[in-house]
Length: 426
Image (cartoon, rainbow, N blue to C red; front, top):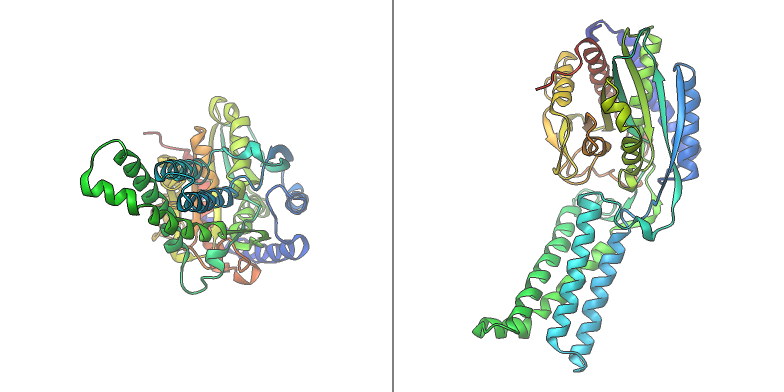
């Protein structure tokens, strides 16, 4: 089947259904912190819907630490501020030498940058052992084919919503997040370099330059400590976004993909179509990482060609793209599957999409790709980022039905093309 043959009325009805359901979920369950009862309750609500048009639905549980992923912002910033303040006082009172102070501050900054690299850039569960664990849940729904399963396509969206990022919420029309984060990270790097130079200057004669660094470089550490105040205030762990766009739009893209096939009476001969509703994306992709680990053999070694399309925010139509690179550009999603999604978008009448990169942050697709499972991401969000991103403005009044509709057309087209020809391996 081609997307041009699919009833437009069914797509329109499901866009309306999505807006209504997202509104209902937010009003009934509220913000959904990763691993929370609200998150699980919303998933159970969705499972009841899926039960009516799927052959199988099931939960799989796992353990995660919701705050571990971003709480490093407070630990790192507090440690650097404390190191600079204490060392400044001890040097001023002649209790500590400048050499020792530079070693301490440089060491703390180095550790802080390493934690930031592991958690925020590479999404490693580096800090998780230090935090309380809760139970998270992933929900899978399956529409089986009439015959033997030879192909499997999974449409995935995460249901958890993010802790509020103050930089974005209080920026309003002026984006302060980029400059503030740039100053914070940049000053930390400069402090590390200055500390190393000053330490070397204690052993190597650098002349006037070495004397200058020894006498005045610590002043920059004080500037770095001041910059760390913004990092400490970056995440508001007491406020959780409603998550209407990020990512109930992705959640319902998965739900309605199966719902629309059911409404149109479409059953494939050999292609299994699944909806996956994950938890823990906002906690560092923890849900998808666990699912990929548990189902690697099934998705890679079983002989069933499997591809996962992660949908994350269908809002800003002008930024609707296929994300071939992910996790701040460090992970490559499947080129073949990304091309199939792009070709399907053109076939659906949307030829303005581009291949793009998640240059700051990550999507669940990266977790699958890292595990060796074929995956890519479809998303439509202003990378500036959008003013509703990770804050309380992301509610149902900010939904964009036309963007949701475009996303649904591309997803259906992708499912039809995957069923017809699978992936062309290169």
